[in-house]
Image (tube, one colour):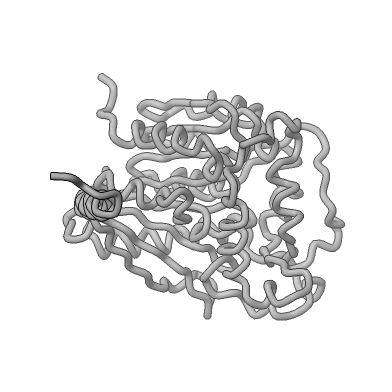
Length: 349
């Protein structure tokens, strides 16, 4: 039978449609739930998002994980941003995990303290590390209670490693495995801050230009080439700045971030005084970072790793061609795989 070009085109379209439908049927659906957990600070609430495969239930400690974000940007637009069609939360959910993230008070979709509606200079720094550790504790306790668990996995990024590490050090019985991505540790030498340390204020304001400049700081033009796939920065910035409507309404738009972390860097980390004791970690620990990380340089991890003396086993992995924000760069899948392998592997014998 002779097939005309028009009929052939119709047949091809039909075949492509059937193939797309088949692929869609092969991709499991992911259930999403959101809730607010009361924060230790009176009147504030912590935004928590949860994802897992639709219909899945009865997760154990080894398949339950909570993400903790860093100093400036919320978890909701870092760990659950569908770059290239899939987020890290999606990836973990499809590996059979019950995965959570939280935005600390003052960040993302969580309650902002009333001081953030006043000029920054009118109040002292908000959301210090000890307050953030307490907020993580409130969320962990909520998850454990709801799911009937005694412990779960915790993963922190950047300042989030001090929060996750601090919580794990003080409550080791509640942490099954610990992941420290781009670990913050004591600072060698002076640090460059645009903020007067004697007049920090409650919060700081970051523009898109500031965010992009910091992301690519210290990289050569060759290293920058192709590092962030086209459109990814805009997708992230749009989602992130939208979490702060008052900041986004300014001209130019800004994101407001609490200054408690900066206060702690100046009074602790810069003076060689960490906020937590790694010798208290008694669970398996993974430390992972990228080679071009200029925010928490490799020397920090190299100093911290030997101090983890009571973990049953530990790993340190450096990934090539990535920055502090490799989670949203071309080599993000390497980060996902390293963490997944650590979470899934049986304990060494």
